[in-house]
Length: 160
Image (cartoon, rainbow, N blue to C red):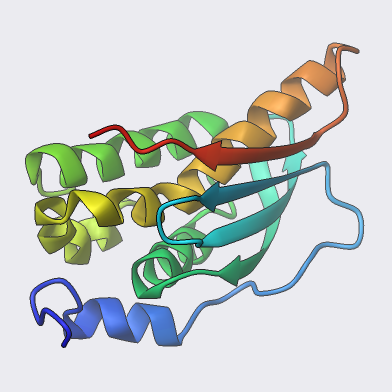
C-alpha cells in the first residue's frame, strides 16, 4: 500500500512526465548514479559552454521518487551554471535532512519532496540526478585538466 504523503499527487505527476529522456549524441560529460538500496539508476549526459549547461538528457530506471527528482532536474537544468546545480543539490539535501522549504528560484520545484524527509531509505533515490550531475561535472573538470575521461559511474552508500 502506498503512503499518500510520500507518493503525493505532485510526485506522481512529476514521475509521469519526465522531460529530456534519452541520450545526447555528443555529450561533454556523462555519469551514471545507482542506488543499491532500491536499484534505481540514472544516466545523464550534458553539454557545457564554459560553466553553463547548454543541453541535458537522461535515461531513468528508477522508482517513483527517483523519476520525480529526475523530472524536476530536467525541467530546470539547461541554462543553469555549475554553481546553480550545486546549489540545487544543497537545496534537495536540506529538504531531505531538515525539511527546509526551497527558496524561490530554479529549485522551488523541489517542494513536493518534503514528505520524503520522513523516509530516509528514499533519500538516495531523490538525490540520484544531482549525484550524477555533480559527478559528471567533476569528471569533466578532470578531463579538461588532462587527468581522466568524462565518464563516471557511482553507487550510493546508504549510512544508517
